[in-house]
Length: 81
Image (cartoon, rainbow, N blue to C red):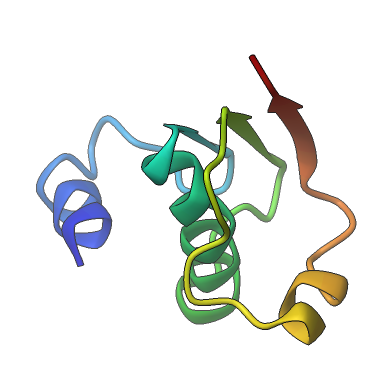
């Protein structure tokens, strides 16, 4: 909800066809969930996307099947410290 609110509020500055998602620790665990939902529900990222997960603690609210069916065109970097 917060991401969608920010995009609506600053829509003149944000191109939702090209978006990157970044998170650290617990936030990194939420990034795949947010990325997948924004692609599927908001139809974002048509011209490219990436996710950068720094020291992810877990994967938030996603089943193993959802992770396996994650969009293959999303570039992903997972950094572990």
